[in-house]
Image 1: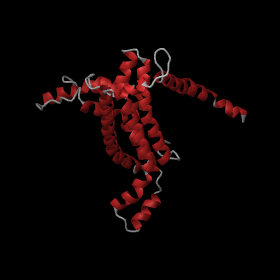
Image 2: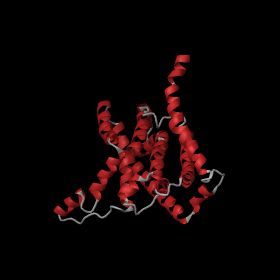
Image 3: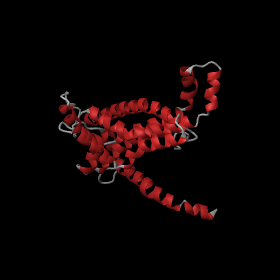
Image 4: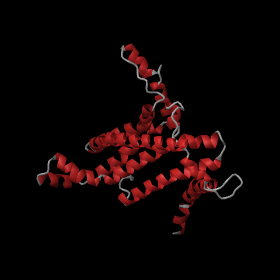
Length: 271
């Protein structure tokens, strides 16, 4: 028993060093002034017009990206779940292969593709078609979010679909249910844990991102993540940046609570 507890030592060290301590530092800086006295001003800065606007845009783009990911991921996950083991494993591998590449490089690749003299517009010009002018717009940011976070929606849903007993679906069909009724009454309810997990895993990083909006938005569209980044890097105001980060933690904690309620057994995340 003691040996088993010792095996958890490296994990506990990692969790305390890189999760617990940083969170405590953010909480401390967010609730204090530069002199170390207690204050609510850092959190209250969220109510400033420019910060509220950045938070609102971030929420909107994160919501749109999450909806698009869900609409694309569910049919894809259903197709994968109906393949045999070898086929689905290979397709899943191909699908998540880009995730092995650095996040920044993947986003830079889309910047190269979408810019006015980029690859896509060059091909369109050759074909004498109108060029796309979506770089440095919200559309480009949403595209970058969907591309980077789509696998996080597909995999939980795919995992939930794979766990559905085929006999249950067959029984529904034998009892007279058509394909649509079977999906609404059987498949969809049983995949709710995967859907909730996928929504959380897409919405939270989409809400807090700043790299995608920097590169694909050209710095013209500020999300709350960009405001926090500027507070830390440009203004060197750790207190303000931490205070705004505490506000975002409310959304993260709420997402964790939703997952804990609808996916108690971790069915949507055990992939």
